[in-house]
Image 1 (spheres, rainbow, N blue to C red):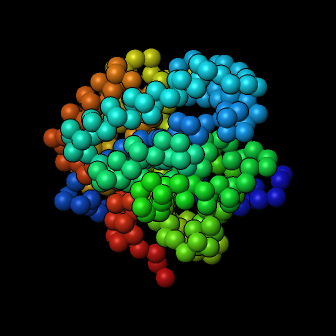
Image 2: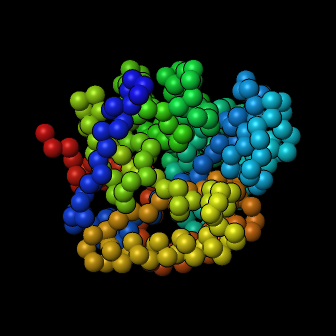
Length: 310
């Protein structure tokens, strides 16, 4: 077993143990709803970024093999996200007055910063999705250097550094690396979302200090359009989101409110047919007793409501 795997495998399989805290979200909302828009296009695997092969993950033609040169079909599929998809999503969120958290890949921000600047100006949160959309468990990836470059790219586009983090394809020490780099740079890291193991935030201990984790989702996520078994139609996506929302909403009505994350990608749900399903879900929840919040807002609430016990 490689060095470092001992720490990440000190697993907590109990969590809240079914004894969820009884509290109220702001204004007595029965559920906290976190929309996440992943901004990755341009940060994926491509020889243009110095990678040995092209990207094969989360696209309209799954099952392909990496190419040692440029894959023009793959590149243009990704380009749809920044050219069209992101603008459709911004219009949709503007229409409903909902705020989202953007998981922004630093390299993508460098190549096309204007939509990210616009997100920030419209009140959305821009969280770091690391510098590249690659596997950070791969040998030789300069993770600490990438952490700094991601922060720099987002700060340049928005005027402020990110206060949240999501790497995605993490390595065994990714959380520690990010926390240490934020500390070294004198920046506040409110949370990370590199976990999928609960319906509420929770605290973990890293380097002797408490750190907040706001779990993310891979099931309430449009990526399921591109991986089996997944959504074969927008109706399936809408139904799954609605059913998940209804179950969590009912738990909130019973006195143990939860949060619900929804993962979105500009090149995927930004397509017209899929955007229609997202709009139907927004229309469904708009009249409910729901707190639509950024992950930074949820982190700030949790830190105040459930501070670290000293």
